[in-house]
Image (cartoon, rainbow over all chains, first blue to last red):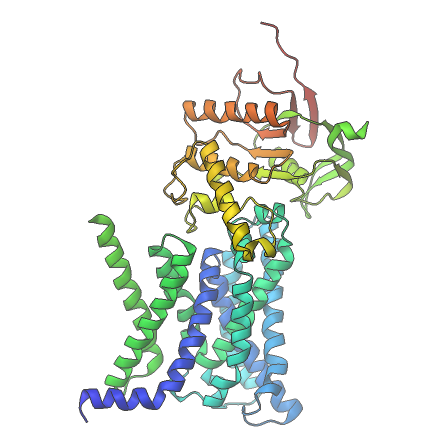
Length: 289
Length: 223
């Protein structure tokens, strides 16, 4: 099989999976823009880690209460998974607010949460006696072998989240840039902030479920970071970020298909980094020139 | 009697949820006041200013606000200058928010025209596309004041507006504020560390000193 034939074979075989992946990655990258602009990248990492903790707890409860052995019943798993993720999000946000009000640094607190989440995973696996691949899938999944039903199942909820986040684009921009001014402009800043974390929490939970925590973290932070670094306006950041995700995915999947023994996720993460670095160097050269 | 006031505190306790800064505060700010908020570092100047703006809740007591529209010019170092935003967008954030206006093309155009007019008034004509990180301290200060004024406030608080400015910049901003106070009858409060003789325009001084706060009228010196 020639190189071209091999690429064509894989691209046609996995096209639906790739298109779904593109949609999910664009969504989490969009959340990543706000998280980075809010200077809460570490919170993003904590969130992805706790989404996995929530998944494992949800999976365990699903087995105990409904005696569901497989993850094919997505709805029953979600009964626990999303509320537990959101509970983590809101408790963390409340703690962060308290720290902020007391003028204390939140960084160490978030680092402790990150370590705690990492430590909880093997313990919870042991507690719930399950070694199902579905739970380990959320760690470092193989995107190409993700159940197509799972990709379809979360698509419309994700579209809903995307529409919501786009609808609140201007209020979110205001509260993230200058919450005091947002309040004086008549916005209910506290409620909007909770709404923001609700959206980000749900999006992250869905993406962790589909692509695993590492790819979700990478898709959340890397394209958004480089887009913010090279763009002048927020609209420019959005366009650049989506372009970066698109090109990185094309490049990453092409390379993964070319060297078909390589796992897709690490290749995609490095592809995000490579594309971002190229864009950054070009913009730097343009500025110097 | 009260209608001649712009804001009053009655037996108020001011501070954060975990800590009280001022207790039993009874103050009455007259309308069209031009007041300097003055005191040592950490004595609660910003805390009282934020409370007056409604950004901090009273721990106890009553605060009555008779002003229609309050506006705030924060310290420059409180702003994220790396945020990808142009000066025109910064000024636009000063408008009262409504979804209707966000989605109306006509309203957006009207707002953009008003933003350009305010940038021009503040000496920033042609600088609308300047990024926050590219603007000088003086340009950013002017843009922040333009943002506060675009919503037509009758109550304005400025937190150290003269820091990061050179002498010429300070004089320009001072003259502008003085003119605004006289022409538009705006009640203005300025948190200011200055120990200069530039008190000529102030009508009052709010002095904070670790737990105590006093409003003192400034007597005009005869030349």
